[in-house]
Amino acid sequence: MDKISKEKRSRNMSAIKAKDTTPELFVRRFLHGYGYRYSLYKNNLPGKPDLYLRKYKAVVFIHGCFWHQHLNCRYAAVPKSNIDFWHPKLRKNVERDKQNLKTLKKMGYCVFTLWECEIRAAQKGSPGKALKRLISWLAKQNAKEN
Ligand SMILES: [Zn+2]
Image (tube, rainbow, N blue to C red):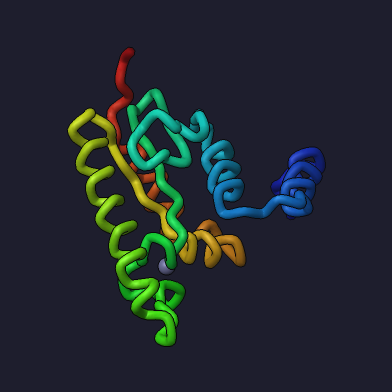
Protein backbone atom coordinates (compact mmCIF):
# COMPACT_ATOMS: atom_id res chain seq x y z
CA MET A 1 0.00 0.00 0.00
CA ASP A 2 2.75 2.38 0.90
CA LYS A 3 5.32 2.67 -1.83
CA ILE A 4 7.40 5.34 -0.16
CA SER A 5 9.92 4.03 2.30
CA LYS A 6 9.86 5.31 5.85
CA GLU A 7 13.21 6.97 5.40
CA LYS A 8 12.19 8.73 2.24
CA ARG A 9 8.92 9.84 3.75
CA SER A 10 10.59 11.43 6.73
CA ARG A 11 12.92 13.16 4.32
CA ASN A 12 9.90 14.47 2.42
CA MET A 13 8.31 15.59 5.63
CA SER A 14 11.35 17.52 6.71
CA ALA A 15 11.47 19.13 3.30
CA ILE A 16 7.88 20.24 3.70
CA LYS A 17 8.51 21.49 7.19
CA ALA A 18 11.55 23.49 6.17
CA LYS A 19 11.24 27.10 7.15
CA ASP A 20 12.31 28.61 3.88
CA THR A 21 9.66 27.91 1.27
CA THR A 22 10.64 30.44 -1.33
CA PRO A 23 9.87 29.54 -4.93
CA GLU A 24 13.60 29.27 -5.60
CA LEU A 25 14.03 26.60 -2.96
CA PHE A 26 11.02 24.73 -4.22
CA VAL A 27 12.43 24.60 -7.74
CA ARG A 28 15.85 23.58 -6.46
CA ARG A 29 14.41 20.74 -4.46
CA PHE A 30 12.35 19.65 -7.40
CA LEU A 31 15.33 19.57 -9.77
CA HIS A 32 17.45 17.84 -7.19
CA GLY A 33 14.76 15.18 -6.84
CA TYR A 34 15.10 14.51 -10.55
CA GLY A 35 18.85 14.19 -10.20
CA TYR A 36 19.76 17.46 -11.89
CA ARG A 37 22.84 19.26 -10.65
CA TYR A 38 22.96 22.99 -10.67
CA SER A 39 24.79 25.89 -9.17
CA LEU A 40 23.27 29.07 -7.85
CA TYR A 41 23.38 32.72 -8.71
CA LYS A 42 25.58 33.20 -11.68
CA ASN A 43 26.17 36.83 -10.92
CA ASN A 44 28.62 37.14 -13.75
CA LEU A 45 25.92 36.33 -16.30
CA PRO A 46 23.43 38.87 -17.71
CA GLY A 47 20.34 39.12 -15.54
CA LYS A 48 21.88 36.96 -12.78
CA PRO A 49 20.03 33.72 -13.47
CA ASP A 50 18.79 31.87 -10.40
CA LEU A 51 20.11 28.49 -11.45
CA TYR A 52 22.84 27.34 -13.74
CA LEU A 53 23.08 23.80 -15.09
CA ARG A 54 26.60 23.46 -16.33
CA LYS A 55 26.10 20.12 -18.00
CA TYR A 56 23.53 21.63 -20.35
CA LYS A 57 24.89 25.15 -20.44
CA ALA A 58 21.40 26.11 -19.35
CA VAL A 59 20.20 28.84 -17.04
CA VAL A 60 16.88 29.16 -15.26
CA PHE A 61 15.23 32.39 -14.21
CA ILE A 62 12.61 32.44 -11.50
CA HIS A 63 10.79 35.66 -12.16
CA GLY A 64 8.48 37.53 -9.85
CA CYS A 65 5.28 38.24 -11.79
CA PHE A 66 5.06 41.89 -10.82
CA TRP A 67 8.67 42.98 -11.23
CA HIS A 68 9.07 41.17 -14.51
CA GLN A 69 5.51 41.84 -15.71
CA HIS A 70 4.24 38.35 -16.40
CA LEU A 71 1.94 38.72 -19.39
CA ASN A 72 -1.77 38.33 -18.61
CA CYS A 73 -1.03 37.41 -15.02
CA ARG A 74 -3.18 38.81 -12.26
CA TYR A 75 -0.14 39.24 -10.03
CA ALA A 76 1.38 41.57 -12.59
CA ALA A 77 -1.36 44.18 -12.29
CA VAL A 78 -0.02 47.67 -11.76
CA PRO A 79 -1.73 49.72 -9.03
CA LYS A 80 -3.85 52.26 -10.91
CA SER A 81 -3.18 55.04 -8.43
CA ASN A 82 0.55 54.96 -9.11
CA ILE A 83 0.60 54.06 -12.73
CA ASP A 84 2.87 56.97 -13.72
CA PHE A 85 5.42 55.79 -11.23
CA TRP A 86 5.33 52.09 -11.98
CA HIS A 87 4.91 52.06 -15.71
CA PRO A 88 8.34 53.35 -16.80
CA LYS A 89 10.03 51.42 -14.02
CA LEU A 90 8.46 48.10 -14.96
CA ARG A 91 8.86 48.71 -18.64
CA LYS A 92 12.56 49.13 -18.06
CA ASN A 93 12.67 45.76 -16.27
CA VAL A 94 10.93 44.03 -19.16
CA GLU A 95 13.28 45.69 -21.65
CA ARG A 96 16.28 44.60 -19.60
CA ASP A 97 14.98 41.03 -19.43
CA LYS A 98 14.67 40.95 -23.19
CA GLN A 99 18.20 42.23 -23.64
CA ASN A 100 19.59 39.73 -21.15
CA LEU A 101 17.83 36.89 -22.91
CA LYS A 102 19.32 37.94 -26.22
CA THR A 103 22.81 38.26 -24.78
CA LEU A 104 22.61 34.89 -23.02
CA LYS A 105 21.48 33.18 -26.19
CA LYS A 106 24.30 34.82 -28.12
CA MET A 107 26.69 33.47 -25.50
CA GLY A 108 25.33 30.02 -26.23
CA TYR A 109 23.17 29.52 -23.15
CA CYS A 110 19.80 27.82 -23.14
CA VAL A 111 17.38 29.91 -21.12
CA PHE A 112 14.26 28.85 -19.27
CA THR A 113 11.96 31.20 -17.39
CA LEU A 114 9.71 30.11 -14.57
CA TRP A 115 7.13 32.48 -13.16
CA GLU A 116 6.49 32.80 -9.49
CA CYS A 117 2.75 32.25 -9.87
CA GLU A 118 3.38 28.94 -11.62
CA ILE A 119 5.57 27.79 -8.79
CA ARG A 120 3.17 28.97 -6.11
CA ALA A 121 0.44 26.96 -7.79
CA ALA A 122 2.75 23.97 -7.87
CA GLN A 123 3.62 24.33 -4.21
CA LYS A 124 0.00 23.81 -3.31
CA GLY A 125 -0.35 20.49 -5.03
CA SER A 126 1.33 18.38 -7.63
CA PRO A 127 4.57 19.52 -9.26
CA GLY A 128 2.50 21.49 -11.71
CA LYS A 129 2.73 22.10 -15.41
CA ALA A 130 5.54 24.63 -15.25
CA LEU A 131 7.96 22.33 -13.47
CA LYS A 132 7.06 19.43 -15.71
CA ARG A 133 7.75 21.72 -18.63
CA LEU A 134 11.15 22.52 -17.15
CA ILE A 135 12.00 18.84 -16.76
CA SER A 136 11.00 17.95 -20.30
CA TRP A 137 12.84 21.01 -21.58
CA LEU A 138 15.99 19.89 -19.78
CA ALA A 139 15.60 16.39 -21.14
CA LYS A 140 15.65 17.88 -24.63
CA GLN A 141 18.85 19.84 -24.05
CA ASN A 142 21.93 17.98 -25.10
CA ALA A 143 24.49 17.50 -22.45
CA LYS A 144 27.51 19.55 -23.41
CA GLU A 145 31.06 18.55 -22.85
CA ASN A 146 33.30 21.15 -21.34
ZN1 LIG B 1 2.41 35.20 -13.06
